[in-house]
Each structure stands twice: as C-alpha cells, then as structure tokens.
Amino acid sequence: MSRAARRLRVLLPKPADYRDLRRSWRGDVAAGLTVGIVALPLALAFGVSSGAGAEAGLVTAIVAGIVAAVFGGSSVQVSGPTGAMVVVLAPIVAVHGIGSVAIVSLMAGVIVVVAGALRLGRAVSTIPWPVIEGFTAGIGITIFLQQVPAAIGVHNSGHSTNAAVAAVQAIAEASWPGALLPIAAVAAVALIMLGFGRFAPRMPGSFVAIVVVSLVAVFAGLGLKEIGELPASLPVPMLPAINGSLLVELAGPACAVAALAAIESLLSARVAATLADTGPVNADRELVGQGLASIASSFFGGMPATGAIARTAVNVRSGGRTRLAAVVHSLVLLFVVVAAAGIVSSIPLAALAGVLMMTAARMVSISTARRVIMASRSTATIYFVTMLVTVSFDLIIAVGIGLAAAGFFALRALSRASGAHREPLPGEAQPGDNRIALFRFDGSLFFGAAERLSDRIAEEPNVQVVILRLSQLQLVDSTGAHAMAGLVRELERRGVTVLIKGVREEHRALMEKLGVMKALRHPNHLFAGLAPALEHARSHVARLAKANAEDS
Image 1 (cartoon, one colour):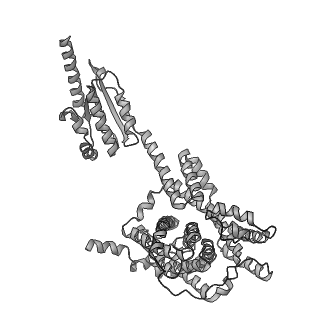
Image 2 (cartoon, helix red, strand yellow):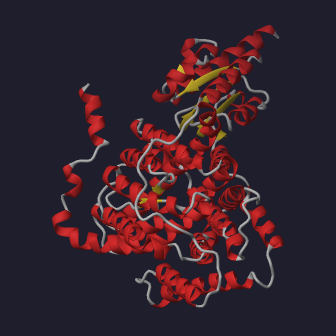
Image 3 (tube, helix red, strand yellow):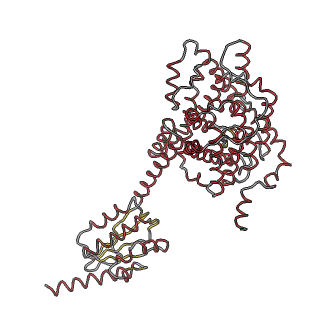
C-alpha cells in the first residue's frame, strides 16, 4: 500500500511546484499576458477549423489550460487546442456532429489519465526523430489545406473529410473574382505576421494582424464572413450526453485522439525542457494532467487538450518559469470572453485562416527537411512516408507506419552489422586443422539475421568440427536461439561435431530453454575458453583420422 501511495503522490500537485514563485512571479505574470495574447487568435482559429466553433476553442484554452498547468508534469507547459488535434477532430465532427467533440474529449482524457497512471509517459522517447519530423510536417501541410476553403470564401460543410480533397473541391466551387477579397485578407495577415516576425519578433504578430484586418473589414464594410456571436461567459459545466452505441462508434477516434494528445504533450514538454532550465519533466504526471484537462474541457463543451509547442516556447522565452504563467494565460482568455465577446465575434474567418496558414507554414521546416535528406536514405524515406501518410490518411496511422518503417531500417542495419566470420585457428598449424572451422559471431543473432548466419556456416565443405565463438554476440532473441539450435542439430546430422565456446551469462537461459545445449552431441562440448575447445577439436579430428586409417 505504501508503494502505491508513493506512486500516487508523484502524480499529484505538491507545494514544491511553486517553490520558485516568490522569485519569478513577475516574469510569470508578464509571460502569461504575452502567451494569452498569442493564444487568443489560435484558440479561435483552431476551434473554428475543427468544426466545433470558436467558443469551443476558447473554452478549451481556458479550462484545460488551468487544469493542465496545475496537474501536469511540466512547470512551463501551456496547453489548449492545437493544430494537430484539429486535424483529427475535423473528420470526427464531419461524421458524428459537433456533439461528439465533448464525448471524444471525455473518453480520450480518461485514456490518457490511465496511461499516466500506468507509467507509460516515457514511451514517447522511443519515437525516432524522422518520424516526429515527418509527423509534424504532415500536420502543417494538412492544417494549411484545411484553411483553403475559408481563405477563398467557401464555407460548404459538405466537403470531403480529407483536407487535400476538400481543398480541391473548394477551389472548384469558389466564386471568382469574389474569392479575391478573402484571399486579400489572408495575404494581409501573412504580411503583417512576417513583418513583425522579422522586425519586431517579441510582438504578437498574429494578434496585431487579426486586429488590423478585422478593423479594416468592419469599417470598410467588406462583407467577409465573421466568427459570429460568442457567449459572454463560460458555459455551465455538465456531463456530455452519452449513449452506448455512440460510445462504441467513437471508441476508435477517442483512442486516436488520446494517442495524439499524449505524443504531442510529451514532445512539447521535452522541447520546453531544452529551451531553459525550468526543472525536470515528470512524463507520467504530464499525461495525468493532460488527461484531466481534456476531461474538464469536455464538461464545458470544449475540445481535447494537448501541450502546445509554440505557446509553450513563447512562455519560456517571455520569462515564464512556474505554473503561474500558464494559469495567467488562461485568465487573460477568460477576461476576453467576459469583457470582449462582442468584439471578438466580428473577426473575419479569412483572418483566422491566414493565422493558421502561417502557423502551418512554420511547422514545415525546410532546414529540417534538408537535414533529414542529408542524414541518410533510410532517414529520408521514413520522414517522407510519415509525412505523406499523415496528409493522405490519418495521424495515428502515420505514426504507426513511420515506426514500422523505422523499425525495418533499424533491423536491416542491425542485421548487416551482424555476422559469422571464419577465423584462422590460433597458434601453429597442426595436421588436420583444415578439418576444423572456427566461427566468430558478432553483433546480434535475432530473427532478421539468424537464417542468413545459419546458411553461412552450413555451407562450409569438408569440415569435421565446427567451433562457434559466441562471446562477442551482443543480442540474442528467441528466433536467433531457435535458429542456433537448428544449426547445431543440422551440423550434427551431417556428422559434423559442434563445439560452443563463450556463451554469455545473459544469453544462457534463453539458449537452454530453446534447446541449443541439448542439440550438442555431448554436454562437454560447451566451453568457457577457446584453448580447451581447440584442443578438444584437434583431438577429435586426430581420432577420426586414426579410425579411418585403421579401416583402410
């Protein structure tokens, strides 16, 4: 019980989370204000783009942002709606309706909490770099494509759930030259963001762009489609309406959302830890915090939450060092809802599309793609396969295929690094040495290399004794041990005596279980050193030579 209690305490908030608050609170408040301003257009845009509405994006940033800040495993993580989650949610909303968002958020939150309680937080460290980069680039391309309809003034909900197909459909349906007006709004947002990014990088360029374009659209009477009316307060919390059949239908999407929330949140926390000395990240607690954040968001009609890499980076670079900064960010957004809902409702959808297109463009890093391509052919293949599958099919499928591709290339490299090499016998040559084959095993004996190595040894002609040196073998799996036992039996059936030298202690149990030792002609054919094994082999060859001479 005490051990379980200790594990539980590690996953819960504690006073030590705020030990630096007395020293850093001014910087935290300033960073929270900055991140809140940066997050406002993104929360609105992600809510609209997901199909759940701008209100859902704001609610998620407020409620989930506070819960994740208090319960999460990072001191500087800023959570809320993100582009990756939008990519997953948009097809779910198209198929199951807006009401499904809160249910998926609740189900996914429970799954992520359970994953944290089971201490699965470190699993993200096993995802290879090219998979992560390909995944990120694919998300960026998908987000960009998702904004094409709004950018050209097409708001038909009957488009395909695939972003690329929907973009083509929207272009075909666009009313020209009327589409040039929203395109101009998108271009204006992009130019303002680029200008601030170059000449005033500390200023929230997306916020300024939204304000400028919205003011021009309103006072010039451009007639651009707007966000629409927003509530002036948070909704009353309530449990989402759930029925059994809908739970079954949404089980798969909820698992996909949970996997994405876990991956993105842990990656964001890991990136934040490299930006500044903000303390260690508890990966398992981070999952619990993000899961609770999604659950809380669902009670208010919000979306699933994840750690937001861009907002977290702004937080750290603006001086945020404790959880107070993320809490202030959410309070800023709450103030906007209470005091400025009417103003926010007048923001053109094309302006939000411009913000997301710029955000998406920054996710597709040309320099990163260049490094990936220059690294190796296999790395480039993994990157592009993951990216293309992300755009064409599904994010979670893309990660799975990317991991499979990475595993294939890793096993191929491991297999190529493994080998069975025939060595000359040590010492002075003696009569009969040509009848003895000494093989040294290097690297790994696993399912990808076992058969190839077995064929290499079995093809040796005119050999009466084979000595297998296994002391340099680093890895043996069940298939490799099974192949080794089969090799020994095959050689013994051909009349070749097999001697094994140097079985490492960590491999012995597996080899014994799978019959490698039993396959030897005699238990004494297992040696710790090479010298006694060679002596035994030479004496055996001498006995055979003597017996053949007597028979003749």
